Image (cartoon, rainbow, N blue to C red; front, top):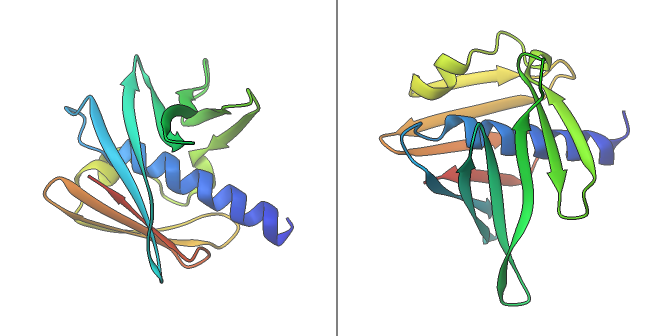
Length: 142
């Protein structure tokens, strides 16, 4: 896997973990992305049936950035569809010892993808912070 493809994969995994880590009783929440230099972006997430719509700002307007839906007939596989209708699937089985229950309940969780990426997840009440050693970005679910 090339470095660019690996980064793209890790970003999608991080977005998926963010939406799955959010409190299940919240119909709407936000994901803020921070870099070493500070704040980068905040996206609004809205539950849509059994999936999620993610909205971002473009040219001063809020637009649908991507949707994430479980793949029909597959367990732990999610389909990302971007604003250009391009789709990509992520299989959570690519994360060693992944547990949705642990993701939603543990205050501290350490995960590793099958390509060796380490992901750190820390929770404090309704805020969840996710970081990957492969990315220079921290994701905050609030």
